Length: 349
Ligand code: CP
Ligand code: NVA
Image 1: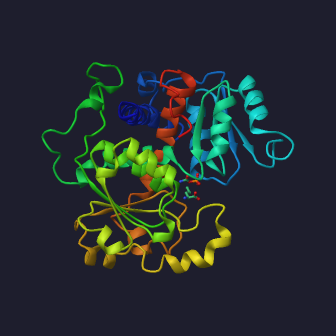
Image 2: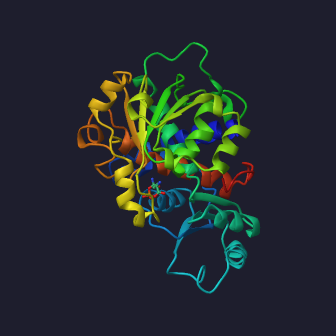
């Protein structure tokens, strides 16, 4: 829900402020300063979170492992060659056994049904680390990055929400707060895959407009549109197949890989279908993007999706975005696995 999303963003920002000083190189903080530092929540003390990953990962795995450590617990990586799942054992039995020993499951799966099955039978909460349909923790990191860089998007409108001050506790908070973000036009140029799908069900509800260009044959599947409509997000979405039209007025331009994990056999067809979709200065100038547009990509990135000038240039927020995977996943672990105080409703979506 929108309040849960806002709460997670505020919590991520606060955990980041509290945790960063602890990560200074050893000895760089004076003794007095160390004594004054607050520890991040230790809600995972003595707890283990199972990372049930059937696909590769750099950012999500690193975020989960380093984040769990900061919360006082540990993450236990279980790759597809490590355990019996999928070869000798069902998701149902695996979920029951892991849930008897661990306090949460963070799962990266192939087909989305696999995570639904785990969530159905697990006695502990299950959080989606990426499935064929959704990648919810990625969108939290993207939103945190946009909020933290709100100053790059001109003035905040007077009516912009101040809910983040109150979101965590119901009363105004002391200390650093998450900057408000004005309503943005966000263009997505690329494949209709898990990252875009979560943008479709999230950004319009937070007041942002989405403009999407994707080849017709890769249009989001029916179950994603069903969810988009149920949540009333369809009114905030423009959809077409022309990248130039999509970037019109864009404050932010986003893309993802054209060949998601598991689609390697389709590489040749996909490279053809995405001709003209590379994000470049020229594309965005000709399409009429906001001259100050910024760039996001979940990573890993291939140069055919976005050229080096944009990717490594001053518009690019991709590395702060990657860093923010850690704080947002850590906030989700703290609330969902450590404190059990955020509704598990939709936890697998
Ligand atoms: N963005 C993302 O999920 O990256 P990894 O696949 O490296 O975890
Ligand atoms: N759409 C990509 C996202 C990787 C983080 C994939 O599923 O491979």
